[in-house]
Image (cartoon, rainbow, N blue to C red; front, side, top):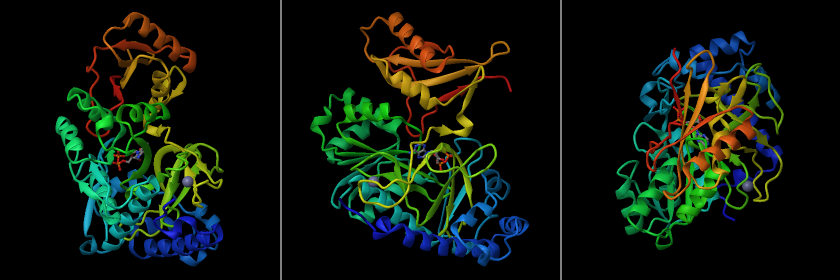
Amino acid sequence: MAIWNPAEILPREQLEALQLERLRACVARVLRAVAPLAARLRAAGIADAREIGSLADLRRLPFTTKADLRDHYPFGLLGVPRDQVVRVHASSGTRGKPSVAAYTRNDLGVWNEVMARCMTMAGVRPGMVVHNAYGYGLFTGGLGFHQGAELIGCTVVPISGGFTQRQAMLLRDFGGNVLCATPSYALNIAEALERDSIDPRMLKLELGLFGAEPWTEQMRGEIERRLGLTAINMYGLSEIVGPGVSGECREVRSGSHVHEDHFLPEIIDPETGDALPPGREGELVFTPVTKEALPLIRYRTGDIAALDATPCACGRTTVRMSRIRGRRDDMLIIRGVNLYPSEIERIMLGVADVAPHYQLLVERPASLDQLTLLCEPSRDDLDREHLRARLEHELHQQTGISIAVRLLDRDQVARSEGKAVRVVDRRPR
Ligand code: ADP
Ligand code: ZN
């Protein structure tokens, strides 16, 4: 078992002492340098970082949200003078205007470090060939994985996203051992391999580092089978650092270890904002305590997950977060039932003969919302009507609502080159 940094196995008391010290420094930085957030801290009765007596005081601090980033777009929340910012990135803008992320030299160092930790924990070793199909540019995926792999001492193939047929060729020719991509793009690459008659067993692939969008255990099985690799989940968001906030350990692969010495995780009730105990599902909140350029306090991610504080068999002492069920914004309310696309994915992939590509169409033909699942059979020689009926039955059984299924021809569901668009909303505004 390889561990990149002893910080991952610190005894809890030591870790918590470090967290407290860093939280105080972070609050001091915000009070000193980030006027809009400092005003809010003072309004909440925190005028001095020394008022943070214990980690429990974190709950006294006000939240920051995506709206704050938008209101102070692009550089209004910097914790350092602009000329100390050596890099900017932006969120993908999956929901509206992208938010800007900024990094000092030190922030980039932390990012590289947590990426190297995640990748090592996933099983990446020096000398491996890392085929990085995350998009390069403002999106944090490409450069994040790139830097982590270089720090470990891998051979990086910075192919970025797109030109999918060429991905298949280079994966074979360069002997990629590690594939980094969104899970939906990994499937797209798997299809490109099939088109080129490249059997995954001819490849040197061993690991897949997948993230940047919600995906299910069922999808993991599908990708592993098609690409002949071990698939690992990695999580992050640009506002906190980019990828590298948390990742699964290869040994256990049940929940992602959060790098708690840099990112303090909490789960809150999305409605009331109250903190929830480990095990309860709610909205993930992070305080990136070592961040200099963008020192956010209690940033609400909008992502729905739970925390697990039980010890992990891998030996790490850090808290693990569950898979993301979905973004709060992506929750569909269909005839009073709350539904995340990942739930549909799970049910759909439990039905034999369905390909792992799908989109959800939301319409409002009359007064009620209607949900249609667009998907494909996995082969051409199937009884399509029978398959459609099986799917509709299963969806109804497991969600309690009727969801129409439209089986398209093979290759007709839009393929992704990055984050898959799962929901197409045609409801009138
Ligand atoms: P955007 O919010 O515009 O997509 P980012 O590119 O920063 O911005 O992506 C971060 C978001 O991607 C997270 O907040 C989360 O919703 C999603 N995400 C990242 N990694 C994972 C993962 N492993 N599982 C599920 N969702 C993920
Ligand atoms: Zn572990």
